[in-house]
Length: 266
Ligand SMILES: C[S@@+](CC[C@H](N)C(=O)[O-])C[C@H]1O[C@@H](n2cnc3c(N)ncnc32)[C@H](O)[C@@H]1O
Image (cartoon, rainbow, N blue to C red):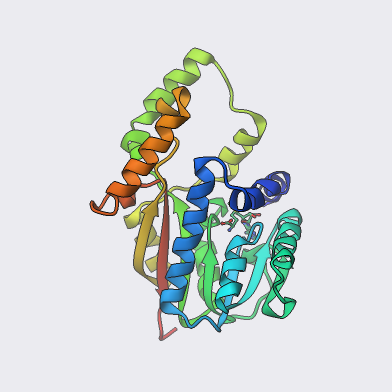
C-alpha cells in the first residue's frame, strides 16, 4: 500500500484536473465512468442514504453523489488526494454536514460492519493485492441488500486488438530498447489486475454479491495508432462508442463499471 499511497500522492493533481479541465480523451473517459457509476447507484438506492466512496481520489464521485442527496463517507489512503477532495467539495459550496472525509486504507479501516447502503469503488480494485479479501471487506461494510458499484480495467479489449497488441509492444520494446519512465513503471507495479464480465461475476459471487449489470466504456490508447496520431485515437474512440450503442461491444471497452447487490439474508 505504501507504493499506492506514494504514487497517488505524486499524481493527485491529475485526478482533479482531468475532471475539472478535461483535455485529453482519457479525461472524458473518466468523466463518463463517473456518470455511469452515479447513474447505477441512483437506479437502486434512494439518494438520501449513506454511501462510502472507497478510494475517493480528488472527490469527483463524492461530489456527484452529495449533489444527488446521498450522505458520503469519502476515504482514501493518499492525504494529497483527500486535500483535493476537501477543496473540490468546498469550492462547490457543499456543506460539511453532507460528507465525512477519512484517511485510511479501506481494507483495514476501523468501520462498523453494515455501515453503508452502498459503496462506490472506482479505479480501486486493481490496486488491491488480494482482490477477494478486498471485496469481502466491502461486503462486510454494506447492509444486507445494499449496492456495490465497482470498476476495473478490461483485459481483452478492442484497443489492444483482443490481446494481440502484446506482440507489437514486445517488438517496440526490443527495437527501442527503452524502459518505461519511473512513474509508469510504478503504475505497472501497483495496478496488477484486469477484468472481464466473467471474472467480475466470479469474484463478486465468491465474496457474497450478485452482479446485476455492467457497462464497458472507453475506446482509447489503440496500440500502433497512438504512436502515430492522436487524431486517430479520437476518431476510433468516437466510432466505437457510437457502435457500442447498437452492438454488444461495450464489454470490450478499456474499462468496465459493474453494479452488484449484497445478498439480503446475510
Ligand atoms: C485511480 S484513483 C481513482 C480515484 C477516484 N475513485 C476516481 O474515480 O476519480 C484510485 C484511488 O484509490 C486510492 N486507494 C487505492 N487503494 C486504496 C485503499 N486500499 N484504501 C484507500 N484508498 C485507496 C488511491 O490513493 C487513489 O486515490
